[in-house]
Every structure is written in structure tokens, then in C-alpha cells.
Image (tube, helix red, strand yellow):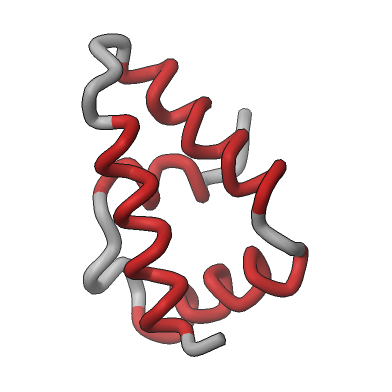
Length: 70
């Protein structure tokens, strides 16, 4: 799958979570969705794309969800 398609899909999922009034829950929901429903290869490819092109085109919620949990 192309990285552009992964970005598009991730942004669509983020828009679903836009309706969550608690921002922390929205980030956690996005993170959980990626972990539960995306294959490791898809997550790795999105991470590689993030490293190669930065956060260009990624919704802010996706960017936050991809950050390591501290």
C-alpha cells in the first residue's frame, strides 16, 4: 500500500475521533485503533513515511497518536 494511502486512511480515522470532546481520549482512541486494526507493516510504513517526509499532510491527532507514550 502506498504511504499516501496510509496517510489518507489515518486522517480519516482521526476525523472520526474529532467528535470526542476529551482530547486525551481521542489520542488514545486513535493510538488504539492503529494498534488493533493496522498490521505491523502498515504502522511501520507510516512511521517510515513520517521520518522521511515529516508530518506533512498528517492530521494533528495522527501525529500525537504516533508519539511514544511516556
